[in-house]
Image: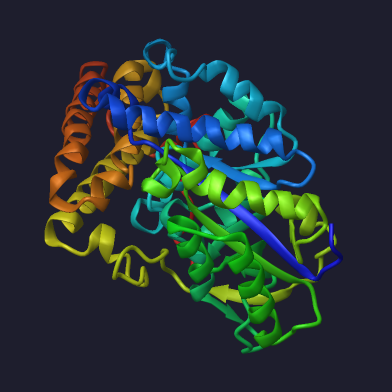
Length: 415
């Protein structure tokens, strides 16, 4: 491989909302086939180019949950052997698995008390499925706020990928081709800026020779052209015709990734693909930065104000309803230490429904998908009413008690 100071982090994001794989195979079998083949294609090309390919793959917990569903496994068996596919990911040393929230929530929009459980559940199912916990975190929709840092560190994450347009280096020099350290309330985490333009190209169409020329040009124009330069591109891996292309020679893997890796293998490429866990090891003294609250760009929206998910009155009302139910759940935990002993089934049901209602997809598609959110909050409301009635019948009244440690303490409000 050619000696170079240009390094490339290539990330792929995998997610399906609750129940979507079952729904697709019934309602639109062709789309279901396009999507399921995307997941297998990634690991197959990683195996083919094990010596040079370095890929980052993030799975939402709810997608992995669907992969473990016996009915989903059986219904897709004629297309992909899902258990074998997961085992291949487990054994791929050149794929760095990256974590995210279990139900793919927009963290700045959901109750802070729910952050830790979304993080911990997501991390736990990665360990269960792949036998390793992720070191890095990819915020769903790249929606990040500095207040997340303590929760990420306490969950065990070492770095987080954020949209580069929101990074504010303390030295005032606009340079997203390097990692930074961001700190909040005494907790510090490594921040890796994603390159928005390069990620947009990865999403819709890339050519390896164009990539080489573009990165060389941008290095020459960067503030620190002689230093190590890190380009980070990230995109969905099962959305759009570029990734879903069943004629592989015309899509992401055949048209871009294979020739890119062939050039790397032949020592002709001035770009070196890297895994973040390897690249960041020596970067113990990275410069400091703050990250402005925001998400990545969607269509014509910048992502600065999260308006894609909370821009309309109906979206804001849905966000408020989830928050109300979460507060009601945590109030029950605080008021009665034995709430799970008295009404455990109803509490577990309410908890799952509240966290599931935080799935970003229910907000992303505006009014069209908001009914899916209310389909969770309605039953959650009923379950919490059952809990309150069970406590009343058992003679429990609100008391100055604390929830069991296993339930987790709500996080502070942050600054």
